[in-house]
View 1 (tube, rainbow, N blue to C red):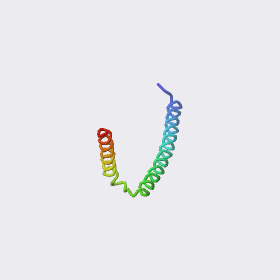
View 2: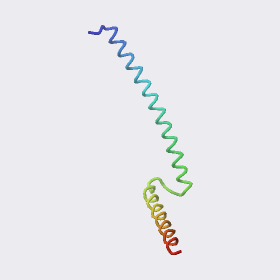
View 3: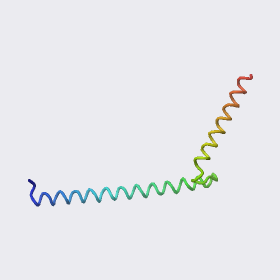
View 4: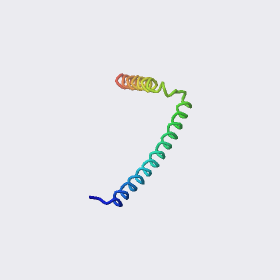
Amino acid sequence: MATVTERLESLRQQIEKGKTEKTRAEANLESLEKQRAEIEAELAELGVKPENLDAEIEKLRGEIEAGLAEAEGLLRDE
């Protein structure tokens, strides 16, 4: 069985590990929040609101499909 000193040392190491993980998580959060702000700014420049992003993606997919179909049709006609 571990001695009191060994148990205390184990607890100290676990606390230090927890502090390190917390610091890493806070840094990741800060980085992700910065990325989100940058993406939202880019979307604003494009005139797209984040809540409309899925609809905008579907609209663009439709436009791409229509353009491809038109190009394929033009090539078949030649």
